[in-house]
Amino acid sequence: MNKAKGQQELNLTQSDRVSTRIQKSLKELGLPPLMSTDKVVGYIYESTNYDQFKRLEGNRDVTNARKEKIKRSVEAVGQRESCVTVNSKMEIIDGQGRVDAFADMQLPVHYVFDPDAGLRECQHLNVGMSNWTLPNFIGSYAVCGNEDYIFLQELIAQYNKTLLPVIVWTVCNGTYNSSVDPVKEGQFKVRLPKKKITEKLDYLQRYVPHLMEYGGRTREALIALSFCYDQEGIDRERLFEKVVENLPGNPSFQSVRFALRWIEKKYSKGLRTKIIHFESLFDDEERKNRRASAKARYSKKGK
Image 1: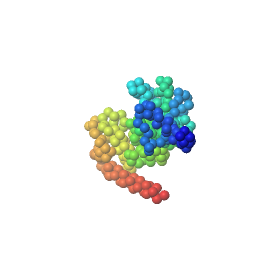
Image 2 (image 1 turned 60 degrees about the vertical axis):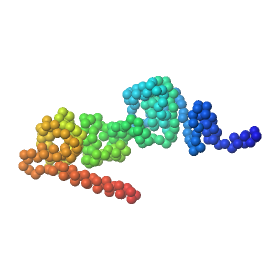
Image 3 (image 1 turned 90 degrees about the vertical axis):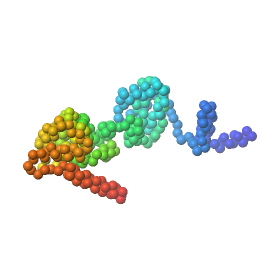
Image 4 (image 1 turned 120 degrees about the vertical axis):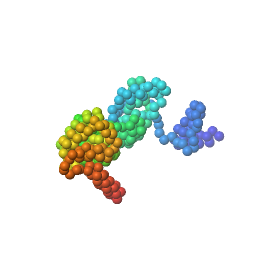
């Protein structure tokens, strides 16, 4: 009998032996047993050697507000945060705020390995925790040395933060597609001469204090003004004067198209020369962009 039992144990794989110990521990703790379909696939480690955890280059900084929030959670309900994830280099993929907070509190860090994870995985994991803002993504690629993102980050630092959407659209080759997914995914490219970009932003910056004081939906207004700026034959100084002059009427720019209609009406009033139909031109631009996007998707699918 004992011989048979010994032979049976010899035939157990390491995973089986671990599962057996886990089943015993679960029973002692009064917890439900592992189901027959369950298996052990990894380990959770614990450490108070905080220095071994490394910051992943390109990851966003940990704010004091984030650390304090974690500390308050621990004080309220105990250390119940999910495990920190590190790669094979001990770079933190998910949980750098927890590591910093636990180090301050002298609490052990529980962590698991995701050996091949890097910056892209880090970004996607963190979106589900505390959403990455557009500047977070831009800063992430900039710190890794991407020249296009370094330039974009410089623009954001130089100009009023209200201009951020316009900066992105302007630098993205003058397109007015509202999607910033390519910027977030590291596909952003500077396609216009930098001097042309800064000249346009210097002009748009003049509108910001007036829009902030009188206008509604500043973002939509700035995108519309960015489009108007690019149109052939536009008198940019007249555009500025007419928009600023009529802003005290407190227009509510519900959309870019609404803003374009309002701008066209104010710009064209009393104008003897040919009127520029901004909304129609914008629709033409939108159709052109949709065709280009569809062509790019088809081409990519064909490969």
